[in-house]
Each structure stands twice: as C-alpha cells, then as structure tokens.
Image (cartoon, rainbow, N blue to C red; front, top):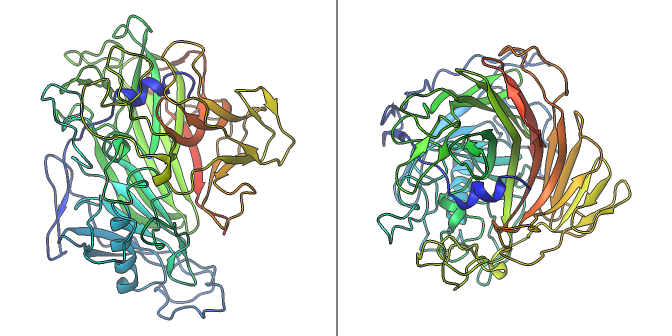
Length: 518
C-alpha cells in the first residue's frame, strides 16, 4: 500500500496466544494456553442432495477421461495425518480422494515449504505444525496457520525485535492448486535438482528450495487484514497500524477460534476472532488500544472477525470489524494476499546508511532474510482485470482486457519521498464482482499459476448490525510490487482519508480468491 504498508512489514508481525495439539491417536483435541477446544465432530448433517442421492461421499474415483461430477461431496471427513517427523495434523477432506491419496499430498505440500525435492529421500519436514488445519477439496489444498513459533528465529540479539513474540499466526498461510483428474498438484516448478516442486502459492515457504527459512516464513502474513488508526502513540505520523494476524502471548488480543471446519449448504467454514493489534516496541510490547498504544486502560479497540468459506473451486474471505468501546478514526483499511518474494533485500550496509531494507541490516542481525530471485519460481509480473488498469510509475492507462506488465524498479528505496510502490491498479472504483488476476506467464495462460482476487462488496449497503454490516466504497484494487518489502501481491484498499468508525457498528470486507481457471 502507498500508506502504511512499508511500516507494517518492516516492524514485523505477531505473536501468539497459544497453540493447539492433537493426541497421537487422533481421537481428541487438546487445548493449550487458553485456546478454546473446538468441537470436531459430528459435523452438521448436510442438506439432501439435489439429485436425491444418499448423503454420503462418492466411493468411486472419476474416470481418467471424465470430469468429476459437479456435485460437491456431502460430508467433511476429518482425519489426522502423520507427517515426516511424527507431527500429527488435522486434515479436513472435502474431496473425492481417499485418505491415503490425500495423506501423500499433504506430506508433499509440507515438505515443499522447505525443499524443492518433496519426493526425494531423506524427506525434509516443512512448516506445518501440530495444531494447524489442512483443508482439501478436489481443486486445492489450503493451510491455516493456527500455531505459534513458526519458521526461523532471528534471536542473535536478546533485545532484538525478532524473537519469539514476532510472528504470523491465525490466518490462511498456504494454497496449492490440485488437478482433480490426476489427484495430484496442478503446478510444478523445476529447481536446480528436481522438477516436482509444487510450491505454496502464497508466501510462507514458497522460496525455500534448499531448506532455507525466510523473513515471511515467520514474521509476515500470507493474507492480511489491517488498518491505520489515528493515534497519539506515533506523534510523527499520528497513525498506528493494527493487524488481524497478530496473537499476543499476554492474551490481550483475545484471539479465539469460533468455527472449525463446519459444513453448511454454502461450503465449509472456519472463523477466527480477536482484537486488531499493533507493535509498540522491540520486546513483548504490543497493544490492542490503537489510540495510545497503552493497554493499561483499553479504550480504542477494533474487534475483528475473519471467516473463510471454503468452496469447491474458490475461497471466500469475510472480514467483519467494529470499534468496540468508543468511536475510532481509521484510514487505509485494506485486505491483501501475498504471493511471491520479489527482489533480494539482503545488503551489507551499516544501520546508519540508507537506503536499507534488510531486516538483518537495520538490527545488526546475521543471516539472509530474503531469497535471491534465482531461487523464486514463477514470480508474478503480469496482471489483468475486469476493468481498465493503469501503472502508477509511468501514469500509463491500458486498454480493457490488456495484460499489464510489472517492473522491478530499484530495490530498497529510501523511506523519504518520492518513494512509492509499483502498482497496477483499477482506474475506476471497483464494484461488486470486479476482479484482478496476476501470474508469471506473459499471456496469463493457466499453464502456470494464476491468482485471481474478486471483490464481493456492494458499496453503500448495510445498517451496521452484525447480520447487516456496512460496506464501504473502495478506492482501488491493485497488484503491487512492495519495493521496501521485497514482495508481490494484491488486494483492495478503502478510505485514503479518515472515516469515523462508530462504536458498535459492524463493517464488512468480502472477497474471493482462486488459484487458477477451472
């Protein structure tokens, strides 16, 4: 984002309240650290099939030459899959595949976050953890990161900011496109050693062909819901940023799992609730009171609910938020998905020398926090939209339906103007049903991964109740090269100017994501 995005990711990310573990037998769920124990079974009884067939999953595989029946499975089968190191992870199967077929796919998806050779022994355990969730339809595998202490720990300095408290958690962290006929991954990348690397199409672990763990693997989100709030905490900007994917060890964020893989007539639902939280210091200093960064007396709090509705071929994200105790002034309300690293941000400059971007350089920490572009497969450099698109770095407007190229620009730009991200954006205000998609193929052929983001809000509607939330008018939809974050992704922004979020009034942002054209 042009406002706040750089700050958001340079400061790091969130911490977590607790993790959830499964018994080795797979027969129960153990809650930990105050994390509520969800009900795993039974799932709600499905609605009768439109064809009048029995309410049961198909037992036969589709013919290799036939497309799968369009009817979704009629139940969710939760089972517990052993990973390579003995970790047991919950898998929700909403596909026509068997547990054995899915189990192999899950293990290879896990390995793919840490190796380009997921089928080669000795197997390399990836970033999935006990307590996370895996959802599988015939068309994609999704990974919900619900646990703490993920990824690499840059703890060379005890007082440094990148210790156990700074990490991503509590959001969708991965998507792998599947081929329903082959019962396998749809997209494979060719690495230096192997050619069967089906990588995460979101960021965590998506650039780790040789066991590396990078900055985003631990500290930053694959999907982001955030906003800037008017604040006395930061007198230079009068702004303080709050994130949904933050979970505090102190418990101030009240992060809670509300729905855990429940099937209804629309799909399978997962829902999480908490307070938007911002970082105010280097060690264990986080606040849910976004106005002054002091939780001694909590007043200006944004309650946030994220619901993921898993459809057969897409994922719908529903973000509801409200000012809980008093009115709050907010701006730059945005939802983004992050799909790829961009340029290498690791430099050797001393901390006093600018520009610098490397999270290690500015904190005098060792290590490589960003991969070189040669290690990053299928970097998305092309975008297309339902509406006319433009480039912000050259003020060029393209014909409707054109594939618009992205450019790198200089890496690690300085903090001061004229710094800007490189954005491909909608010229007209997005409306319900507008979409943008991006990928690495210059024609956006689906021979390589394509990621589509569709806006689903009807602006100007809603009374503010939880059942009828307010839908704001967006400014633009964009695909961005975040030059200070070394990342590529896109989404939508609301309110470049301030808006007063009235106490108790619910707002909603709704979008869908698809990983290819089915």
